[in-house]
Length: 573
Image (tube, rainbow, N blue to C red; front, side):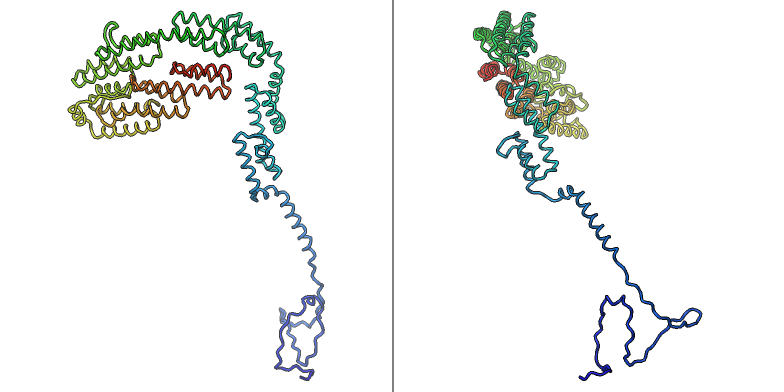
């Protein structure tokens, strides 16, 4: 196509924006394209049309302020991130740090405080601190390790393990930096390392106590000399002093044996075994006690046998001493802890309650009350006694007063009496009985047998029987209480909870007096106390161990482990 000055009208021209940089440049002069020019003037107010004016060139727009603004914004963001770096770091999960902290806490709970294998609490918390130097959890963990080391140092010092105490104290000082507890332990450790002055003071106190006739007790000559020897086994002055204390206590023990005060004699001989384990006269004292016990046991056994024979002959009570009650009481006077004699008194109480129920069946309430009054002196919390009182008070009728105690095997009233009682109990009162029985069952399942008052199982059962003295569910529940208590006691013994086991044994003795099966439970309780004594001794609690042995002697005086345990704890073996 030939080029000419004219544009082909059919030729299409694509629109373009052109160069943006040319927007601010002065307009170029118009190009003559051969077409007529059209000029449009904007009308002015007033109708006048101004003459055309030449357009002045516009200066280019300046945008330099954007760069400083962006710089300031970037500086602000960077400053905020720097100030909040700890918070932002904590928002990011750290699996490795969390795992280390978990291992450290587990080691602390297990008592593995320090070591060199990398698995102790101190090493793991320090590792966590290295992983995140500003970790509050790591710092707090190291503080807790230091406190645990303070406790370990105190326990080791009390047990006489001075090297262990010093090692634990050093670690605690490194972790905690000092403190009153650490300084006090350091002073005690120093005194234990240099006991000369303390030993001299204790010896002087012991000599003064001996001169004053104070052989036992916390500030007695025996314990003071014992403390000296525990710290220094070669101290000849303390050894001779303890021998003199042994002689003085042995004289007191022989006086008690001569006076037939077996309990006092046993206590003194046990103290000699604790204070002076190697006392030469100890075997002869044990032999004298054994002979005295044998004679007393024979006399008590004879009285118990005579009481049982009187029971079989039907001579439960009466004037004179030819009856079961008199024989059992005589046996208890000679041996207050004799289990067979106590069971005998329970059997007498049961016999009296059986007679009282027979009197109730015969509508002889006066005779029944007299018999129950006698039984209450022997077994005030017997279940049978409670049920019989309820029968008399309510007579199987509504409105009876609550009974006073409960537990044991209950006699059953005649069919006619039960039927009449059921007819005379209103539906509202029957519902009340059922509610009380449900509460009693719940209390028994919780182990609330005789406590708390008013909400215990036996209180709730006896109140139900006060409304309906012949309600079979209430009577059966009351009957089941001794069996439930026995199960609870067996569990407590198995768990080593000797205090609860002892309380349950007392409850069982109240609920079912005279039950022959309690003898085996009594021996189990004594054996459990021996185990408890050994456990306490292994923990360094000698005083608590000897107290446990005293309880064991009460329940199982003939246990062959008893004396061996005394000697084992006294000698520290």
